[in-house]
Length: 225
Image (cartoon, rainbow, N blue to C red):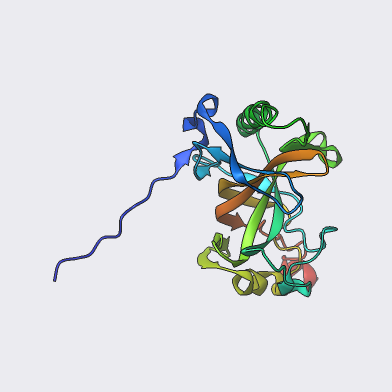
C-alpha cells in the first residue's frame, strides 16, 4: 500500500504580506450594535515569527475585565462561535513596523466607510521601558481552535482547547509568564462599537516555551555543609 502524504499548507511570513493591496469591504450586514459589518480582503493567516522567537511577559489573561469565558465559570455567550483567552505578545522592531503599517492601512480604508475613532492595534507597555505589545486571542473553545504546542523540559507537547492548556496552568498558574512565543495570526474581526473601531487578531497556531526555572539552592554539597 502506497504511503499517503498529507498536503502541506504553507503559511506566509509577515514579510511577504503586501499591506498596500489590502482592502476593507462593508458587507450587507450589521453587527449587534448596528454598525456595518466589515471584512478585510487579501489577508489570510500569517506567520509573525518565521525565523525567531518573541515573548509574552504576562502569560494568559485569566481575569479579563470584559467577562470570563464559560470554561472559567463565566456565562456562555449566545451567538459566539468560539471563546478565547488573550495573550499579549511583546514585539521587536520588524514586527512592530509591520503591524503598525497594517493598522494604518485598515484605518484609512475604514474611514472611507464610516468616521470613527480608530483604536491602535499595538500598544506601548509602559511597565517595561516602553516595549510594544499586540493582543492575540487564543481560541480554546468552539471553532476554529488555536493549534497549541508547548515546549517544556525538553519535550514537545501538542494539543488544542482549554483542557490541554489547563494541564499546564494547574501545575503552575504563571508558567507562561516571560515565555518564548512563536505564533501565526489571522484577522479575527474588524470591530466597531460606541464610535470606536479597530482590528482584532486571533492566533491560528501558537508555540509556547516556558522560561526554565533555575534552582537557587541546587548545590547539594553547599546544603550539607
